[in-house]
Image 1 (cartoon, rainbow, N blue to C red):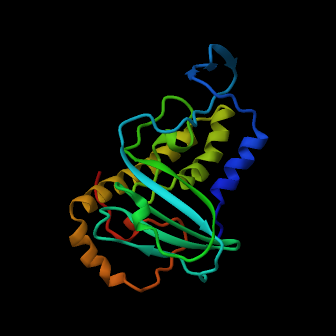
Image 2: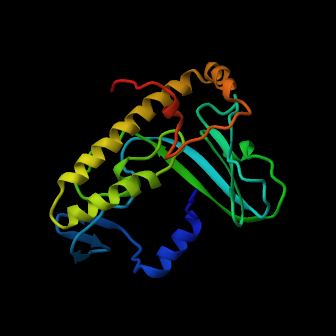
Image 3: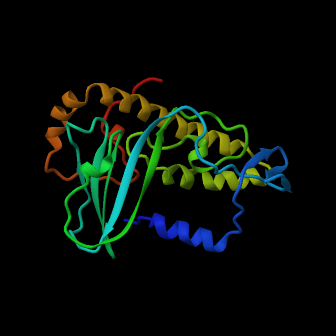
Length: 227
């Protein structure tokens, strides 16, 4: 299993990219930053700007080895949220996602906190972008888990083709991912309304190991819902 270290990735990007901080406006042939126009190809990676239901997340890196299994925890006090512990070669990630304060749902793992990060994650219905976009700006964010890397990884090659003058693959791939996220949004909204009842059915998986071969979300266990 390969897992990206998000904090280290952001640090590397900051060191190796020229970053300008300020207000920016995306134009058809460039971007306007602090009143100065920069011409060229533009990819909108500015984050989600539309309507959303916002959840809070926090994740800690602990300097302890807890084995090789990923653990997921569900709590009746945390509707449509969850907690996790993920083993890494250099420690263990523990985290939680919730509409309320996620810190109260963090798994108890003894050890020294090496890193801590977190923030707000939008739960959205994706809208087709009117400019070349990548990341949260597309709205292709896993509704339940808040993951966005899967959408970036899937769109990146079609985006390169788009930059070379062939937009077809980009929009076809976008629509495919968007359709999946729309499904996740509906299922997560249903979970929010029926959380305690849903937990009764999830008890069937309590203490069991689920093996998956690719990106996984709870929708993968449920039948398709028309949308």
